[in-house]
Length: 136
Image (tube, rainbow, N blue to C red; front, side, top):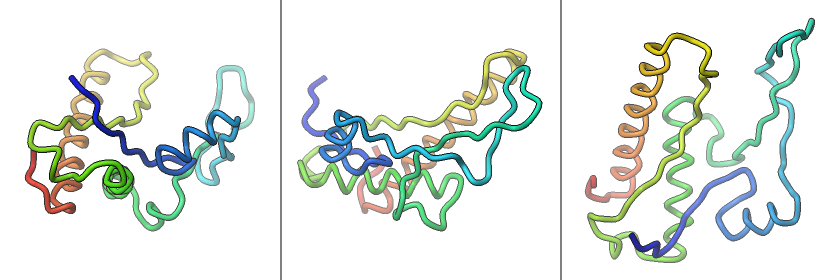
């Protein structure tokens, strides 16, 4: 495999900006306004720290939010290489969160993995359709 270009959407911006910010120690994390968690032994909820992708995800949730983030990553990729020049064999890596803690039954973990794979496949098709690209 040969890596020609990389596109990214993150809480720190596109690829170049995000890498420079991370190296400088900038992380932009903050407590979530809507999610808390109980750690073992805690008697009150603790905040979950998030790193928001501002702007492109405003108003989106669930799979639509993932598509909006992936569209931003493709826009970043376009600054380095023409998407049409990549061709049908170009690989796409989509990283989805895993909220399982591994303590539940194996069947639930397998079902969660299958659900993530389905979400990833649907999301990727929607992103490529939104870019008027042929589905790989």
